[in-house]
Structure formats: C-alpha cells, structure tokens
Amino acid sequence: MNYTVIADNLVKKFGDIVAVNGVTFKVKRSEIFGFLGPNGAGKTTTIHILSTLLKPTSGEALVDGKNVVKEPANVRKVIGIVFQDPSVDDQLTAYENLYIHGRIYGLKGKELEERIDEALKFIDLYGFKNKQVRTFSGGMRRRLEIARALIHEPKVLFLDEPTLGLDPQTRAKIWDYIRMIRREKNVTIFLTTHYMDEAEELADRIAIIDHGKIIAEGPPDELRSLAGNEVIYIKFENINGKNIPCEDDNFIEECKVLGQDSIMLKVRKASEVLPIIFEKFNSRGYKIGKIEYKRPTLNDAFLYLTGKEIREEEGNDLERLRTIVRRRWR
Amino acid sequence: MSWSDPLIVMTYRELKRFIRAKSRLIGSIINPLIWAIFFGLGWSSAFNFPQAKMIFGGFDYMTYLTPGIVMMTIFTASFISGVTVLWDKQFGFLKEVLVAPTPREPAIIGRSLGGSLTALFQGLIVLAVLAPMISNIRLFGVIPVILIGLLVGLSFSAVGITLATKMTSMEGFHIISSFIMMPTIFLSGAFYPISTMPEWMKILAYANPLTYGVDLARHYLLGTGDLGVVTDFLVLVALTVVTLTVASTVFRNASIE
Picture 1 (cartoon, rainbow over the protein chains, first blue to last red):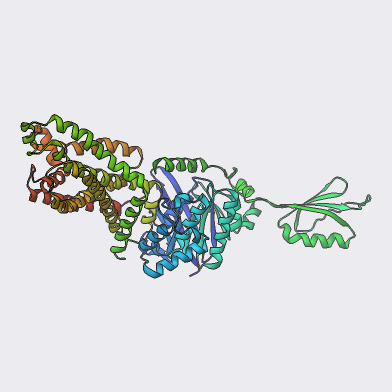
Picture 2 (cartoon, chains in turn yellow, purple; picture 1 turned 120 degrees about the horizontal axis):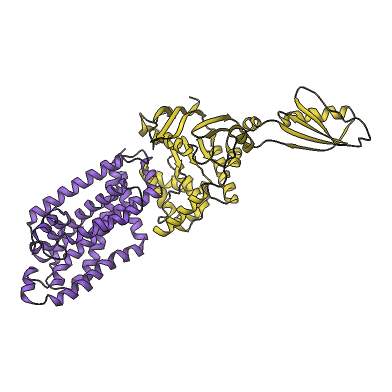
C-alpha cells in the first residue's frame, strides 16, 4: 500500500464547537506530510484522532491500513508521537524516561538497552543518559521526546508542533534531526506546525488547514504559486537610448517597463523561465546588469486563501504559562 | 500484551520519582511527626490520670496515638500520590500511557502499588521515629502492619487516581484536600477512640474505610482496638478490591476530551 495515513471526511465536534470539519487527505509512505495552520485550526485534534486518543464524531481514518476506531490497539503499535505539550518526566533521567516508555511498549532486557543507547546516540544525548531531565534545556527535552517516540520503531511518527517555543538555533537543529530521521529510519512523518518556514523546510507535501477544513494541499512550491505570480526585475546595462524590450511570450503574464533601463516581468515559475529569458536577451544583444526575483511565500498563499495571516506568535503565552505552572507545582 | 510489564514499570516509575523527590519525603514525614509530638505529647501530659488512660485502652495518649499517626501518614501519602495523576494529566505523561498499546488496568494498578509502597515506607519511618518515645509497643506487630499499610495505601492511592482522572483542574486538588483528607483522618479513630464518639459521628467513623486500618494497626502494635481483627481485614481487603476495580475502570475509559 502506498499510503500510510488515510483520513476520510473526519469530523470532530466538542459540544457545539466543530474542531475538525470534514478533513480528507492521504499521506504517502516515507514522506514528511505537513499540516499547516493557525492555532485552533484543528491540527492537534486531527493528530489525536489519528493516534486513537480521540474518537471522531464521524468519518474514517486508517493508519498503516488499520482503522483508528475499530482497531486502536493495532494502530498504537505502529505509531510514535511527540505531543505538543512537554511530556517527559523531569524528575527522572533520560535513560529512565526511555526505559519506562520501552517497557510500556513491551520491550525489555538487552534489546531495550540497545535501543535506548542507539536512540540516545542518534539524537546526540548519549552523554546525558543518566542526567535528570530537569537539568535539560527545552531543545534537549524535545530531542529526548523524539528519541522516545522512535524507541519502539514506529511506522508513522506524529510530531505536533515540534519546535513550539524554541529559539531559532534550536529549531534549526531539531529540523536537522527530523530530516535525519526521514533519511535513516523507515518512517512516515506527519507534522503539524503553524510556522511557515518549518513547513517549507521540512514537508514534501503540505495541507493548509483553517477552521477545521483543509483549504489547499500540495508540495510547497505548488502552494506558493497559488498566491500568484513570481516577479522578475531586470536591469539592463549600456541601454543608450535603445528601446527597452518588453516580451510577450506565453509564459509571461505581464511585462512593464520601469524607468530608463529596467523591466518587470510577472511569470508563473521564475526558476524555469529565467534561462529562457537570459538566452533571449543575449541573442538580441541586450546586456543584463542586474536581475532579481521575488517568490510568493506560504504566508502569501495563506493570505490569498483565507484573507488573513497565520498568527506567528500565538501559543507562546500558553507555553510560558505552562512552564511557570510546572515550576511552581513540581 | 502482558499485564506484568506495565504493572512493573509503573511501580518502578513511582519508586524512582519518590527517591528523586527528597524534599517531598521530608515534607510528608515532618507533618505527621509534628502532630504526634506537639499534639500527642501535649495531650499525653494533660491526660496523665488513670481514668483517661482507661479511655485509651490502658495506654498513655502518646502511645495510643502512634498507630493512628502511622496510618494517617500512609493514608495521606498514598492519597496524594494518587492525586498526582492530575499532574501527569497536565504534563502529558497520561497521554503517553493512553497512546501506548498496553492494557491500561495493570498500568494503573502498578501506579497504585508504587504509591502504596512509598507511602508504606514513609509510615514505617514515622513509626521508627516515634517508637522509642513510647512504651509497650509490640515489635512483631510491625509485620502485619506492613501488610495493613500496603492495603490502606493501595486503596487510597486508587481513590486518589480515580478522583484525579475525573478532575479537570488543579483547583480541585485543594478542595479535595480539605473536604476529604481532614475529615477522613479525624473520623478514623486515629486521634480518639470511636467508642467515645457521639452516635452520629460513630456512624461516619464506621463508614470511613481508614477506621479499619487504624484499628488493625492498634490491635497489632498495642493489643487494643474498637473492632474485631477479622472484620477489619475483611473490610480492608474488600475496600482494596473495590477501589482498584473502580480506578482501573475509570482509567480504562479515560479520554483526553
């Protein structure tokens, strides 16, 4: 089977609130599938349904061919999950956290010990094996959670906002590990995020979700182009009063002369047409001095689709509050 | 999947967490010791006349109080250990267990067992500190008290887990501690004999499961008590079975909704 996760018209209502409103998608084996949307769009609820923590109000979902409602036990065996909220036990050591997890998944003895060492080495925490997690930074905790989710060798790894609340360097590092997991482990990754750059960096395909509905789906490039054309600015050298050439090839949507020596071209895909444009101007004896092009971002795409921006910073307040509560109570 | 793995590992987790949280250990031992020493010794000298000693089974008040304080320690520690499921809920460990392909019943029984063992340990430390201060303690009585402490611990950590699984907020914790813990302790016969209580209070005391643990501890440590040993044991075993069943059922059906 080519698809590891299949969601068919999933609906989840909490009382009057519709958190997920008819979501349908398919995740291919071994790809990174990004679920991009603002907070409250239904991302976490979808993950909770797929990981058997919540029952959908209606609709069906299959994970590795197993129905999440009818055979949750079989689904649980093949999934690993990193929750949005921190879930490592900070009074225990890295080893103990992984050991407990392994035993809960039925692993034991030498095999478990080997897998713990392997996971800790993979995520570069082996040197901290016997350190209590409360001494760990936010990034290290996240990595430990990722290591833990991999201990039982799942076929599908769910990452719910894996870099929420982390600083830029740490985020970049976590991204490297996620890429490494994709490269080295035979696992499909389902990732939710409200960070545009994260989805762009990591995902092979992205579904944009808003108000519980998927509003667009495709590879990042394709989604970006939804926002419209890419824009190329060309500045010619030694124009000396020559006519500025405005092209009207079919791949050019619009061409405009700017001032004495520049033009602006709107095209569908600049990366493909730039060589042709070079060629053309060269053969006609025009010398290009400077060239610039702007691609629409995923944010532009989201703006185009919904008329609003993904709110980048929301969610951090909640995160901060949790940290405070955690400190006070533990 | 087997029942033993989740049971063992959840017990292991509770024990490990207990060893790590040394301040919690000190806190949970200091409180009963303050009760025993300041409350106990204070009343002990006030009740230092023959008629008073008759009320307390022929013992001075401090001696009479000690088994009650030990059971109070075990009750409090195990109950709170159960209630900490609320923390697990808040901080994700619960989801970890719920999303795992493991039967949930042994996981929660293991957690109760872990809570019970750590509570028992604290009770025994309190007993060890108090024993030299009192007379007539039966040393061999400690062996049955270990079993009694385990049953009391299992029951009340199961009660704590049940409440915590059903509770949705941290605020609930404070309400519970004042509405459940204090009355349970006062109505258990830990501080004064049930036989001298007003009738209405007696009814509450008999309905209170902790009463039977306190009575048993007093039987084995001092040789005196309000009720029969067999009744006490039957009630305690039944209590353990019922509370663990309820906790398992509630936790099996637990959802994050």
